Image (cartoon, rainbow, N blue to C red; front, side, top):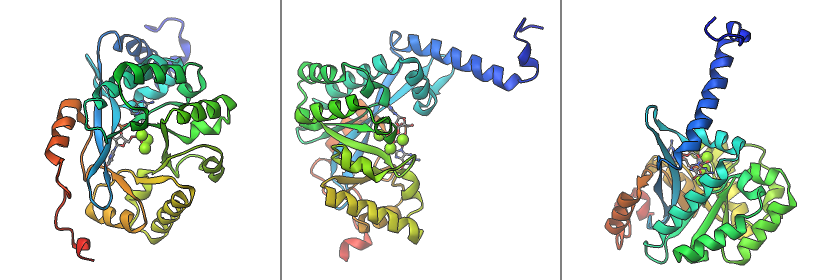
Length: 285
Ligand code: C2E
Ligand code: MG
Ligand code: MG
Ligand code: MG
């Protein structure tokens, strides 16, 4: 009765709640940028052998005034459906580039870019303007895209990738191995890096999974793309992905995503330290 004419709610209360929850989320997302509720955290990426930090991936965080932390996996899809990902993505790029411009000159900045952003006109101009405004060298920026972006097989996406790459911006294929993994993407798109999804790294103790990780690393090497193992949490996993030929690694073992100031402090602490985890048994191999 309370929900008036919305009669189906009696039969499908969960459906009704989900829909209104989503509408609420959309409404809140619209205000989040204006109310300064977003923040970026930065997770280190390391060289799998020396463990030296090679860069950081910017990851968005949203603290909702009443709901608290809303994880990106919960709001990025809504932002994509509503088109809000465009202003949110611009905010992310701008803030991440400003921050990275303060890091040492060899530190890479990885920024996640949604398929929706790639398909809208104006991304190239936006990136160029942001690099100019922040003074970040194009060669330090790596945009992480997922297979869904390539799946649409949109000529505008390919043109956008080539144009940005011509300026020196690099591209990484994120979460590789999940979704509709098609090897033809690796041939058709100019990719500088393959990021092997966490689900493979998690199961790398399994010989079949280790073989797949090794094959992806080999593929990367022969295509001239760097390979990063995502979600490395244990020394065993690090050892395995390193043996499989992954050149870089990212995961809680090396560092969780940190607020900008903490990431900068982490970087200063680690600077000059060759190995973050000294005395690994395989160092003697
Ligand atoms: P992603 O780009 O694949 O980012 C890696 C995710 O794995 C992050 O989750 C990170 O916190 C998490 N992670 C890193 N190391 C480990 C580990 O060792 N163990 C485990 N269990 N998790 C680990 P997060 O920050 O929740 O982000 C989730 C996804 O949301 C990202 O996946 C990315 O697809 C998307 N996302 C995050 N920030 C942005 C953004 O600014 N723009 C866009 N378009 N998408 C974003
Ligand atoms: Mg990513
Ligand atoms: Mg990923
Ligand atoms: Mg992901």
